[in-house]
Length: 349
Ligand SMILES: *Cc1c(COP(=O)(O)O)cnc(C)c1O
Image 1 (cartoon, protein in one colour):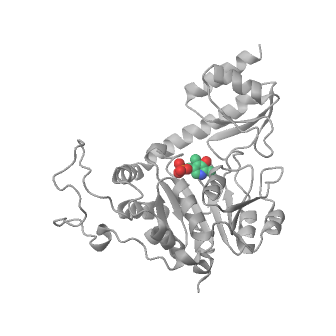
Image 2 (tube, protein in one colour):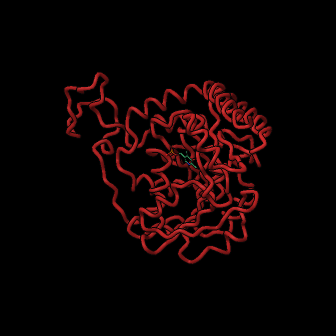
Image 3 (cartoon, helix red, strand yellow):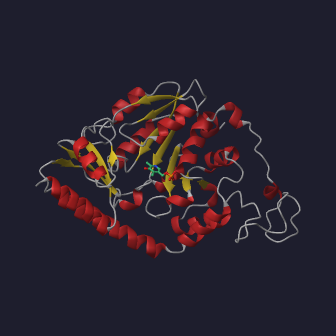
């Protein structure tokens, strides 16, 4: 048995996936009387009467061109959140297995594990919010099936040292998920192609951040073909709707627009970091490889409420591990960033 299928839950290993009408005939032209659709058309103005491609081949082929990764190594889901949930369901036996998370980190790993009745162990990041490799490997038990690494990390903003991530992958006999939702905002090296070296690595990406398409709910997972096949076996047949597929396909042809916005956000981030440093109530600005900044204040609760009263909403992360008095601020438009600065300026008077 291969390493991957050895790690998969036994019921998933032998699962015979649902076979949809569109699995049996993949041609685009024909007289389609197979799926009980409404052949006359749609009530909506746009034609929506046909089921979408269950494997999103057009979007994947476009991704192949841009990222140099084959379709068999790509999973597309209803947001990265779907990929996180599927991975936990594929590898973790409820009430028995466990995942490792590294706080402070993205909240969905814990929620997805809780929903699936999968245990959670926590190994905090070190003082610089980087991986504590020895502590992570020490915490691994016989029932530890997955480790979730968020890099760049939400909410701290930093990318993890690549050698440390590799050390974890190399020394862990389970699945390592590296969530690269914010990687476009970083100038440092990503791990996208590392699944070619490490079959136990899955990299997550999303259209929700740099692409500016949180509304269409499209997340990506990249990994070993066998692992991706298990994700396809377990997913709902039409998990990514056709409207989303069309919008994504168009967007993938507008790389320049993405890159232009990306640069503007990175410039905005640098400007915000500089401006924030001048306020007496700002204690620390954490380095960011993302489109947000974690900021430690002398009294974050006061700042949070003051901003909220002005209808400027930032994210209170002060209860997260190692984030006392910290707020997470998303980089906005030039206008929005100025509004924030003007509001904070008022507090110094
Ligand atoms: C925003 C975010 C995502 C994106 O989730 P989607 O479901 O694709 O919108 C994934 N991971 C992290 C760490 C995030 O902050």
